[in-house]
Length: 111
Image (spheres, rainbow, N blue to C red):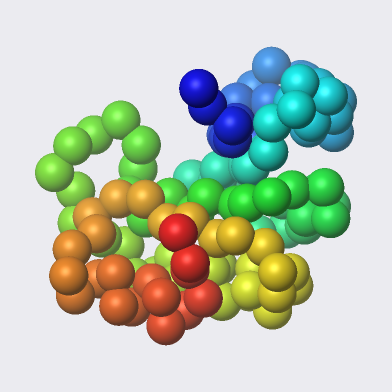
């Protein structure tokens, strides 16, 4: 079974849902919790929740459209998250290959 639940913070905003309440519900279910951010979403959107999270997923493509290229301009987000939360798992998703994964790791991604 799954032991990590990751949700897009943008989905919470669109539905006026409480992000901290969602984090608490996931933790109460005995799971790790993560928040995903789309390319246009800033790191500041997740900053208030970093202390409660197990991971942040930085999307390196726009979700829902296959075949996109890796978006290198997302790497400063990864680097900023690494500085803000050194022990946090940081995942990237989209357009990864043997070359772009090196760039993501150099920026601080570890998943």
